Image 1 (cartoon, rainbow, N blue to C red):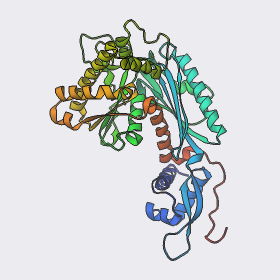
Image 2: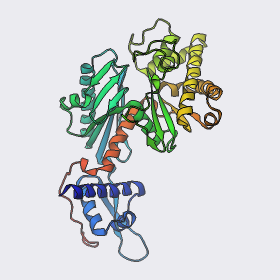
Image 3: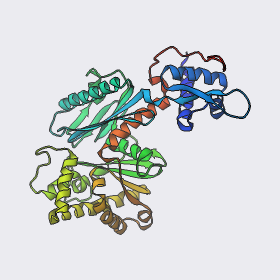
Length: 413
């Protein structure tokens, strides 16, 4: 098939699949009417989608009082899975969903990526992916693709991490390395964790559908994913959103990126841990961030003035940095993810007051903070969402399982 014809067919397969996903079960005639394609083309496209395990045929679909009913077509979402994996300073998270939105895997494992070499981390990552792929295979689900979330500057097209300061990574060919690790032969991509978290928030989070929002990842460092006009803002090189490295205090602490006074040195989880427990090295007795937060919350509940003061200081700097984002980007919502969300009840009032004090009045007044309900899993969830979107955009990425079925006229079964 010539390249242009193949492209047209892929686009039409996508059109039919999205139509069924958005509108639910319907007959071939209804699909043809809804998509503008002719019935013969729809029949051929549906046969291929069935062969790829993406569409199923159900019972009769009555579309009017007269005439013979057509057989209803529906998205067969339970047979194809998308896997998203996040590598962060002290954990690796995996999240898998099928095309129908059913959660198949949701895990987070403690791992000292900050203290490990890139090679050791990627070997561990490959093991996590193989375990997840094996579990999906055991469920009888076809893995359609994998997306990796990393806290750093990512060259998406080449599958390389240019620099990830908190991991100590420089020019790491992550996709190439994983390809040599014996992983399933499916598409593998890598992207920035904050961008992927922002996509998850935009599609299924507390600010879902808000066309202009900023998502802040509250991790050891701070990343920002920016949705503007309903689209992810990438910038000229795809590096937009590195808000944690905006300099806010020229006389501040040295950051992992090598510069001084970055915003994340004021509001990152590592800074909060150090402020609450002076002399504590963040990597000492490595624990999952949920455990670190539980300890801080215990101190707050006990009325520890040092913990209360540290959280208040983070809140004030959070508001000051947010004012820069509001002045530049004019978002309607700033979604607080990661540990920010866990401490939102204490952080948001003070941060909002500081934003109102130092931000431009009208944009600041129209912008609100919202605590994410996706927890530390937002980036891996967004990564899985990228795979789902890839399948919807190009159903041919899912291999054909059987010969396309022959469509029989109504009444002949």
